[in-house]
Image 1 (cartoon, rainbow, N blue to C red):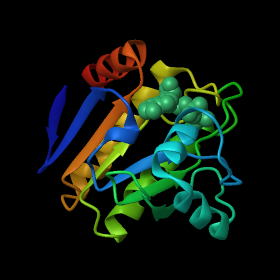
Image 2: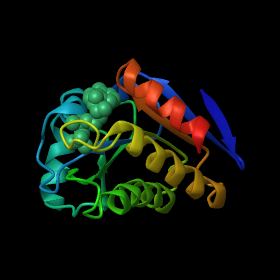
Image 3: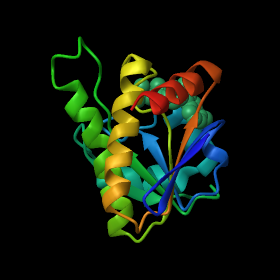
Image 4: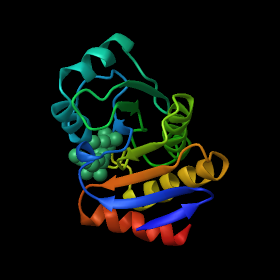
Length: 175
Ligand code: ADP
């Protein structure tokens, strides 16, 4: 599924983010920037030790912010590491922090002249964010950003498994 937003493209695909040929892929990191499970483990396994070496030097990333490292052995040249919120009940700033994680990743891409990037579904794995709610926030935040930032040509959401893909496809139709 793909839509045009201004001069940019917003795509939804079902797949594995480690296989993407976008200039950057976004990692669902933790604040310690230590290798975890889920998409983080997959990116570090596929990209090799250089990613974690650079991440360790950076040391920390607050929730809602983003940092950047090499893509190591990935096709993507860069990994943008962002930290989504751990979901409690939706009344502890989770929506704002989730939107911030997407926005700060996009800002990092713009600042580095990165024209294409791939996002996973931030916070909806171990961090427990309900995917239908997270999908609306993710897509709205990215759409709003692209409308004002034509320098980013492509944002691709790489959704792991059909249920997550379908949740995003529904959300895209709704917003
Ligand atoms: P978080 O801690 O932010 O919740 P997770 O990595 O646990 O992050 O999960 C985020 C999303 O990434 C989940 O939807 C999970 O299914 C998905 N995911 C796991 N592995 C991959 C992968 N290789 N490519 C894309 N998405 C993945």
